[in-house]
Image (cartoon, helix red, strand yellow):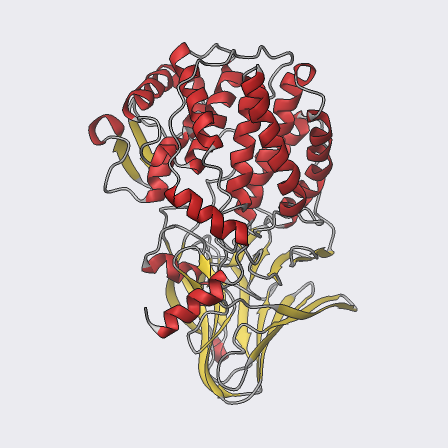
Length: 557
């Protein structure tokens, strides 16, 4: 191993908890036996099931899945096709389509597909028996039974019990975070769906994990601690599902469930507010860290689900500051503009798996439409494209010497991490002003520090980037545009932005002599999706200290 790689590895593992390291050893070498004990009885529910958010269908034929733009026929290619990525394979085994839009019309396909899966996926073998897809499938099969109101066939119920028993020995203590949370959710669902001593044990184990993880994973401002709006939305769905499940079986479950149910209900309103704060006026999430459309339910869907369960939903419309101090994000609203700023650390030190090197990036909507964005997420894995999408240059922020502000590597790992400090929030007349700095580049020669401020009023946003330190560095500042916006070079080095209909929506200028360049780029709003777009770039070599001011003006002729 190269010395540089060894250093990176040490900078990564030093943040792990001992339980993660020991848990990884157990997970790697432990192989639980398959338990085919008699199946517990199924519990008869006492209350109605509230319909949950429905995703887009991904079953396009009796045996055909559409996964990230590719059609996979599980009858022809099996459940472990070699040409599919790990994430795509996982999606085959989730069974999300059971609870997707118009699922009732595909009932026959679903019943046959479950039988096919049971026959062709032997217990403990293959991707479908890994804990994460295992957990999601357990929940999806049980939710399907609740939504349809039908009794599951005996072989399906028996397989479900076998899956739960196997999961009990494959809990993801080595990963923690959202993975362990969904493991626990699956155990709670199984413990409510079945009855008897074994089911009570599953329920107790799941509740114990959730009781420990909920206060750690949900911050005081309501955010899920991995700081990804997409994974936060999934966490909101998880909590709503747990509330729904408890009400479905409330009079039949042990009394120790009730304190947990009160905790779920207590954290939910703030979680909904966090999600609304981190959503654009178009209703979609902002793209910070791993984030893409189509994975989690939309903000509107989750609001509707919450209303049906009796919760009031947040309204984020007032002008001014909307801070999320525990997460580190900030929302600014002024006139037609909504800016969402990343003043956050990369996530929990022991779990930065979904972090991007996007510190001090931002996204901007004008007149209800996205204008400035981050690059998005279209792939997982460990290839070069995954590395590029996590890197600083794929985000609307400043990059020094083509390096990443946090040392993202290996698909889901982070070594050196940027730390945000010196956050200042002020209002002068009608202007909203936010400023912060980070030390992600302080290891470079001259110890450069990036300081950025945003000054927003009714007519413009001024972004000021400063480098403090010594020495000379290559500097690159990127502002990524959505595909719906066209950049055209105007007079005096300014850039005009036009919407699809040809209307001019914004004019951008910079104080730096090198000026703004329009470069071709891509935007990745969904897994498997890459859309052509443009990026506005300022690049130069300069000696510190230095300052660059970029102005976005609207309501201009």
